[in-house]
Every structure is written in C-alpha cells, then in structure tokens.
Length: 338
Ligand code: FNR
Image (cartoon, rainbow, N blue to C red; front, side, top):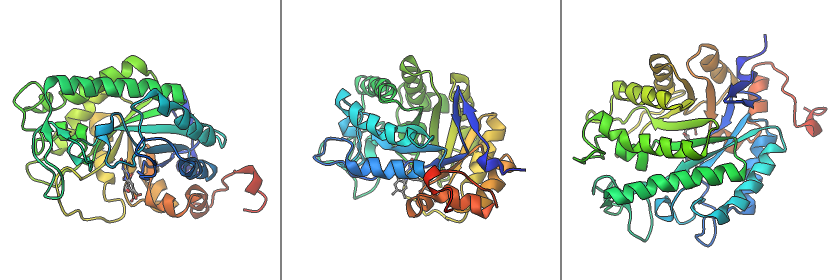
C-alpha cells in the first residue's frame, strides 16, 4: 500500500497531490520597505514546489503596513502587490503544486518605527513598543483590510488562504485572555474574544469562496491562557463558519519557555481534529517521512506542515518518500537520476 503521506487531499475542489505543506516562513526579504516580492522569493518558493511539496504556503503577508513584523515583510495592502505575488504563483504552479498565502497582522508584535496597535495597551515585553489600544473604528478598518487582501489573493492566483491566528499576532491577541483585557463586545468571554476572528472570516468570505485555513496556537503555555476547551470552542465556531482546516501550532502569545521535541505540537492538532470534527494540519519538529506518515495514517492530522527541515532541504518530500520506500515522481527532469 502506498504511504498516506503521498495520497492526495481535496478541499473545496482544490486537490493537493500529497499531504506535505511548506509551512509559512517569513523571509524578511522585501526591499525599500514596500512589501514587494523580490527575485529571492520567486526562487525560494518555486524550489519547494520543484521539490514536490503538495502545497507551498507563502510567509505571513501583511494586510496593512502597520501590521508588519518588520519593515522587510511581504505585503498585500495595495493592488500594486498583486503582480509580484502572481509571479510566485506561476512558479509554484509550474511544478504541479498548489499555493497558499498566509494573511497576517502582527498587532503588538510589530517591530516598526511607527505606532503599533493591539486589543489592549500591553507590550509583549520590554523590547517591544507599547501598543495603542484599538478603538472600534480601527478594528473595522483591519477587518476591511483582511477582506481587501482576500480579493487581492484571489486576483494573484492563490489556491488557498490561511489566516494567521497564532504566535501572538493580532488575531491571537484578540483570542487570548492574556492579551485581550477589553470590556466591549471584543473582549471578556471566549465568545467575545472570538468576535474579531468571526468578523475577519465573514469579511474574507465575501471575497473568497475557496479553501480557508486558520493557524492557531493550541497551547499558550500559561495557566491563565486559553485552555484546550477554549480551542475546541474556537475550532467548532470556525467549522460552523466554513473554515476548512485548522493549522495547529503553539506559543508566542506571551514570553514562555517551550519544551520542544519531535512532534511537540501534534497532540493539539489531534485533539482539535477529533473533538471539533474538523481537519487539521500538524506542525513542529516533524522531520522524517516515517514521523509524518505515523501522524496522517493514525488520523492525528490531515496535512503535515514542514518548516525548518524544508529550508534545509527543498527536496524534503523526495527524502520523506525515500524514508518510506516510496518512489515519488518528479520533477521529470530528475526522475532518471533519482
Ligand atoms: C517561522 N514560522 C512561521 N509561522 C507562521 O505561521 N508564519 C510565519 O511567517 C512564520 N515565519 C517563520 C520564519 C522562520 C525562519 C521559521 C523557522 C519559522 C513558524 C513555522 O511555520 C513552523 O510553525 C515552526 O518553525 C515549527 O516547524 P518546524 O520548523 O519545526 O518544521
């Protein structure tokens, strides 16, 4: 029997040829602080598609300039960004891979010269700026920015959109009681902390009817943070709203020590998958084909996101196939030699 890792996965009519995803990774490589795609990005993403990842997800791409993590982040706040992003898509699609974009806003974790924003005026730590507490009008503007970014993502030819709701960035700052101390309709109970993400999803869906993923941090490593029950609640809400898959990472909400070991986040993906009955992606120190196959075959997650191992080896999928004794075809130019 062929490994499940190399079986196809279809979501809202988009078929990935295998379960391997290049996890989003910021490259901080835009020049002139304009968020534009550079030749580096084209080579970087196309090589992972040539390496036979089923899905190549591009890095956190900011929906507004003040939502960047750094001045060198990719951006999608203007129609002028569409052309460069389309070129990334051409490169990815040339190799039969599908493409995704991670739409993001850093909130209080923006490392910028200008004013930064968050649900509450609490800095991440001493080396970050004091954020301004967002008023309702500012919140609505960001929701609109996600919507416009969804339209541009479609125009640029992406197959899938992922919303970055993890690692302590803006959406996560609204979800977490550690960072959201609001007393209006956007803070307090878990229902209210979910309100911002609910509005972002609704706004995105007015422009986008393709597959929608959301990345969450499934453990905040703080006893006063969201619990697994909270994450199950959020996941069920997302499912009801039509989100297709939750990509489950962890941490980054508040400074914390994280015990990192092979597959350290897989149990969070597994619990959300089974308790909220929604597909999930597993990520975090998944480095071998055997390890990835164990996760998908035991139905602990549906997709495997690989970050650092795929930076080291763009042909990680080929290596994973070798681990599993499977003959993975492509790129055709290499098939005779492999
Ligand atoms: C990341 N990660 C990350 N995550 C995310 O959701 N959006 C992003 O833009 C980035 N940027 C980023 C840059 C770099 C250089 C690294 C190494 C990581 C996190 C990444 O997607 C992944 O979740 C973690 O790296 C854990 O997976 P690995 O590296 O153990 O496979």
